[in-house]
Image (tube, rainbow, N blue to C red; front, side, top):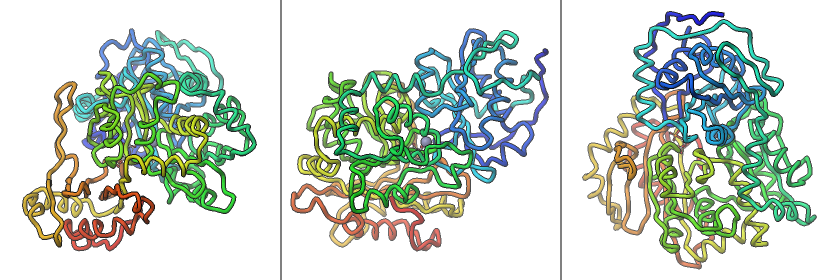
Length: 545
Ligand code: G1P
Ligand code: ZN
């Protein structure tokens, strides 16, 4: 077999966004060399390929398997020493991160568009993670983008497809291909962090019921192995557990809108005590109790406040971090427990340096993402197991744990409005208009409410001093309330404006109010300040979380 250097034409639009290169399936399938170019551009940034292992896997969405076969052939042609592939091409994002670290791989390619819909008309995506197991930082993605714009050839070997159905080894030319069980190592890692004996007795006590909604996405097999096989939960605990290439036509995003079936169960009479869901590639989580939704920002704060009662974190936390739009609930915990708290731009890649440098142990985002230094990605099932361990330890319901937390730290009422598929130019103009009028906004008349700060968030990484600017308009009020605006970096159609609203309340008598009502005044300000109806021609958001 011969390595071929195939001529190709560069594309100008392969700039990775918040989380890799994400496009419609048709863009990858119908544009000659679109996938190949991007993969070769990634490989061109890796210099010692013949001494390196590469991890490859994806969330099982439509085009996953075809893409993996092509990637393996390009990897062989590029002379990688080893390619480690998940069985049937499956690896959840957290499992891939764990594997890169465990096998000391040079990096990994994860095929996923996360929570975006799949199928022939859905989305596809490619993420490159570096040797620490985390999403490539901007300096790497910038290089990949530069290579992709100048590429004129990619390397390829026309070998037979690899059998990914069975685990085991294959050798092609100088490359060893190892097909591994997608679940086993990840489940072992979870067992090291959490008290499986305690969780097991909770699940088999007979007075605790739970349901996990895998949304027909990648976590089905992981949840079956961990919750059912290892922790003894009944099989019915895992629903929508069969991964499907189009996620059963659903939108695999664990929130109250898209995981509606679960939400209805949790709010029904005699509903389960605990409910959770995860997204397309397994890195997001939604946590619920009976009649109770735990906002992701609160979940991060509660996890932080209780970390030392979990075996993997019993020595305490070095620090915590949250993305800028995430509520400041965790800041209150950090302050009280005397640990550092960092505020980063949106996207998990910004946590990597802090985790690597040992500055933080736990981090999270309002977008249903929580995780720790065990890997370099957010981790859906990790959060579920954390909560189960916590419930087993505290012998309290989810609602009791949440309410007790608010009593101690106060409550950060929080919501996010998404205006989806809006005209991209209009959305850019809206942001630009605010950027140019920061001081006018700050000095505006808000019926007696004072804005203490108004800026466009800029972050200087405390580890490598790299600067990321234009990360979102922040309006901070004197009483600690906040309005934040930013444009999504993960969509594939038009633009999505995200508006984040937050209000802090410490009065014990005002901790159980209705979230949307409590935030309605801020919502009005947010609408007026950005002139959303005028500029976007939208009178209400598409999604409220
Ligand atoms: C969204 C979330 C962000 C998360 C990312 C990947 O990005 O807001 O917190 O890290 O997905 O899961 P966005 O579309 O806002 O750029
Ligand atoms: Zn995801």
